[in-house]
Image 1 (cartoon, rainbow, N blue to C red):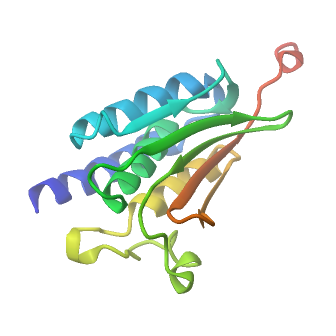
Image 2: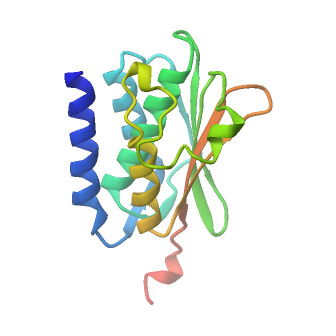
Length: 175
């Protein structure tokens, strides 16, 4: 219970601290790699989490909010997956947007719950200490940066959580 309360307080403090920051240019790959690694190590699952990225991906974001978002998604993926399963974290970029995708090997989310997972205090894991705040805080912090957060079931099983942020372009540096 003390770990659960500590996590709630940490998430709320980060949301308050990071919520008012103006977006800045950050390397999404670097931030995602660090946050995923730290989350995995803290849960004793460092050997299960693999980050795939082709190189630096510069986006408009905030280091604190993006770290917290990736950390929440990786923790959820580890908790949803069997103990020996692989968690895949991928940084994907396109012309306008970049995404961090976290795929787990769990059972997926019940269709009736997919629409509610981002509601504050809604949790599918209340019996395991879930508070229903992680995804709600993640969604709000990413939205404050002009980004989007989503969660979907995968056709082969498991779920994919995504954070999507607007790409930074060199031409914007002189604007």
